[in-house]
Length: 236
Image (tube, rainbow, N blue to C red; front, side):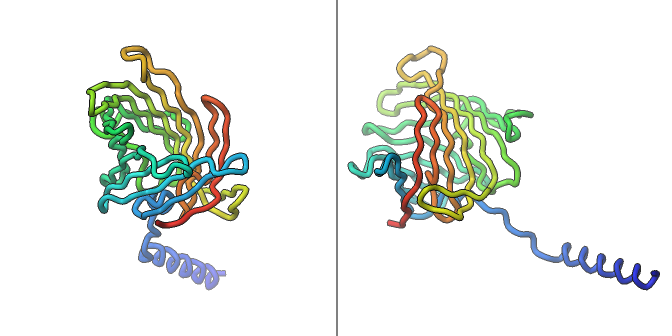
């Protein structure tokens, strides 16, 4: 018994030492799922036809813009600009209608995957859109701030709540055997009613597939229920 106990303890010690000396496995990051740093693209389909298309266009090693639009009238005027800063991907704003719209926050909070235990962590600057390193647990982000139309100075108030879920198996009607992260989001603003309270404009889930990209699945709940699924991805 004693000899067996010593052998077991010795094996355990070797295992512990191996664990201490082995390199830690690097966490996955948002870039692996979004393909933020690549000239990547994809189409998502609904009702048997292409419902939308997206492309990432890297502008530098830390900055990229994503366009969303109708593949029948490509390229669109619309593109969102994201900047990587430390372990965050920040939303700077978007271009559309021949001008640029700057997004700046007045308050941001972070909490657990059910939007509990919220703590304020920013009161100015770009919006913290998503963590770059993907944590093992889900987390919630809440942002309030303003959108400024650069051509006119017009200001719109907004609120944006997101819940990011960790990697999990996923599939859609066209592509199976994938791994996805999920974004649930609810967007509120007072566009068209300056000075009035913000109201809900959009609520949806979006799944991003590792090595594929955006819009693997979209399930919109508001303003009307709608679903689409990615059918093709490519580099351009």
